[in-house]
Amino acid sequence: GQLRSHTGDGPRGYGSRASVVAVASGKGGVGKSTITANLAASLAADGQRVGILDADVWGHSIPQLFGVDRPPVAMNGMMLPIEAHGVRLMSTGFFVDDEPIVWRGPMLDKALQQFFDDVYWGELDVLFVDLPPGTGDVALTLLGLVPHAQLVVVTTPQLAAQRVAYRAGRMAADARMRIAGVVENMSAAESSAESAVFGTGGGARLAEQLATPLLGRVPLDVILRRSGDAGVPAVIGGEESAATGELGRIAGAI
Ligand code: ADP
Image (cartoon, rainbow, N blue to C red; front, side, top):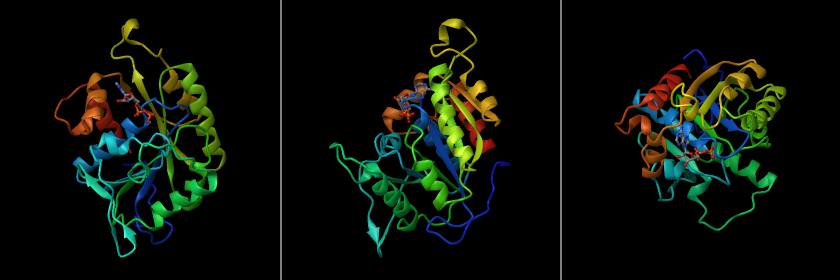
């Protein structure tokens, strides 16, 4: 796709030519991880070498979305990502149980760095990074590690979500991170007013504010929720819908 930059900054565990796409949101619960999982699975189904680094330390839902519940193994001092549905996964969720842990800034920075340096990703075409929600520092830490990382910002159509997502996008843009575009999730299923549960227009307004393309609008769809619970990303789950079609189209544009 035309959004790739391929300006790798030297050899690393993930392959210097991988494009790194970080996925951010202002608020939690807008579907950031669901979108990440489906974009990754869609590209992998197309034959690309894809990884997801799940840096959403509080909400780590990538293991669940891919149906993985075993910890990764180490080899020669490197951790091997777990491959599921064609995607190589590494998540903070692999290393913690249900006890809450307090990740302070420096620990988080260190963990992120280890996920790049101490994980044997192999050659990748695309590495997605599922960022924690909020305007936090993780995107900036990532930018320090991977200067060519790009950001995709996920919002719902709702004004409240759009506003916080704008702060997250703006902070990254101020740090000179490239914003690849906005994905609106939980959009109205069709043009009827009743299905616009979260209102309309948040994605388009956010894209305009950040001067970046609106990559697509993914409708509210029970298939996405159900497949997330079942551990198989919807785009490869065999049931097609407007939502899975849109996710496949967005993946093609990335
Ligand atoms: P986040 O990563 O932003 O916290 P998640 O990806 O965990 O959000 O999604 C939050 C919840 O919403 C999950 O239960 C997920 O299955 C559901 N969900 C996400 N997107 C959609 C959608 N377009 N339609 C229906 N349910 C969705």
